[in-house]
Length: 129
Image 1 (tube, helix red, strand yellow):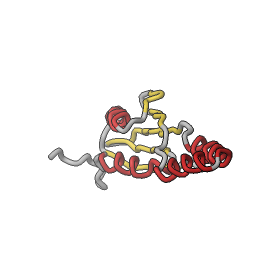
Image 2 (cartoon, helix red, strand yellow; image 1 turned 30 degrees about the vertical axis):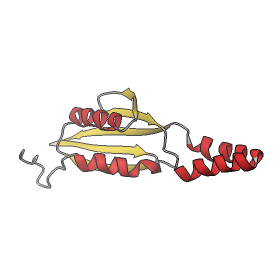
Image 3 (cartoon, rainbow, N blue to C red; image 1 turned 120 degrees about the horizontal axis):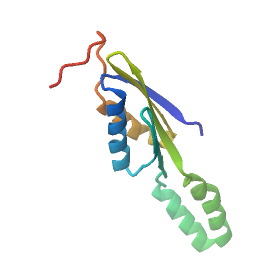
Image 4 (spheres, one colour; image 1 turned 90 degrees about the vertical axis):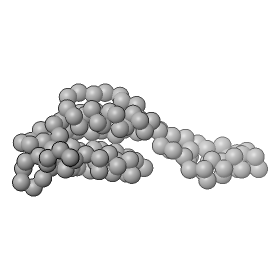
């Protein structure tokens, strides 16, 4: 499947967005693979639904060959390393943040982007609370 992209505009400087991205994604069991001032890459494995694990075990117990085939075709294929890439572009009064991610990480990326303060429409950063 193709990776998805989400973008947002924030009042934070690019360096602060990178710090928050590292803290957020490493707390969610994604390893920081590489990081520069404006780009951070995180590597992780998707979670396999219990249904697939139970089906693989059941097929292996009942019929060894279909269980092995199911494991190879479904579970092993799903357990490939996947990346989340956070990219920032500085603009006046903040930055644009773009996140490229696999489809299974949709909720995680939405949570990260929701945690970033948005840039106000007037171009000035919002007042701290």
